[in-house]
Image (tube, rainbow, N blue to C red; front, side, top):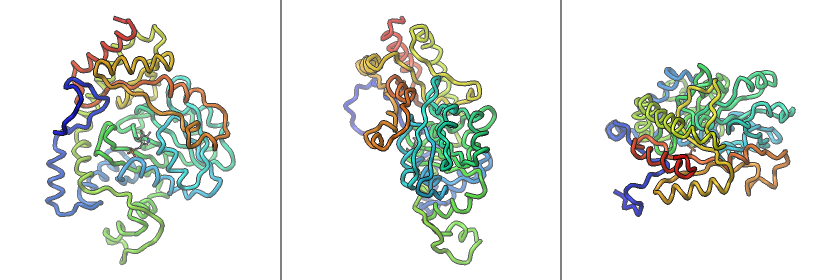
Length: 385
Ligand SMILES: *Cc1c(COP(=O)(O)O)cnc(C)c1O
């Protein structure tokens, strides 16, 4: 045990967990005698994602960030090419494309929920637009019905940043199967984790072969091992995007137990939603889940406080009771790094979620009595009990 100064009844925001056979599978990987990437467990994960999830091709990566970087490389961006993306997201959504020389065009969030406001995307299109990146915030699907006609009409690439969205759906379609490319994360904070890890899903055959080359440091090594080529050589740019077998083994244990993980998180999510519903009458915002996104994965439960000072007071109130609640993204377009480069319109909704949103503890091992304590502390703060 790592000694910790935290009180024993402290409720963290997130906690890594074992669902069952993780350590057993890592031992199995060690016994198999191959710990570098693309071994038995990696291939088992790939097969699972291709057959059960229906991705045309799946490649495990070292992180969600790495999967986004692969997606950006696959676009073969030229100077001046523009990428439309939400401002209310993690830096990796933007960095991946900026590293490839793209011009970033930030879009606002919807007034109802933190996802990109599809209605504003048409106004941001120019002849240089190459791709739109959507983020399924909190595992709740972005409004793709509004976006897909635009994507087709302008011959754009749709990339899903599905980092938070494993096991979520847009109507009957699994998230990550809809975009030409999609990136998932298995970071410790995500529903299904491998500590650090990710996945690139490729749903358009034109990207499949090159993706595998980028993944294997610019070589045709994967094809060579399948016996498809006589030599293994340098054929393109690339990097080391593949995780070790220890990561894949850990991930496989969690994937096998994905239904149990989702069920528990959704139970917690729905209890928060129900118990905190009375706050709606006070003007506190509760998560809005559009009908097309009803089958979500319970990744994040958030409240929207009425003001920024109120949010900070709520976080302090909870901290004083041994509960860690946290805010989320600050808008990228007005960040210290990007604001001097930003020439678009103000994005008031992204700013509003940055100021008002607070996330409550939600993780696999959160107990009933711990969640009860969080609920009571929030209701007490609002004088609602
Ligand atoms: C977590 C996350 C990422 C990055 O994933 P890593 O695995 O941490 O690199 C990217 N985008 C979003 C929206 C995320 O939530």
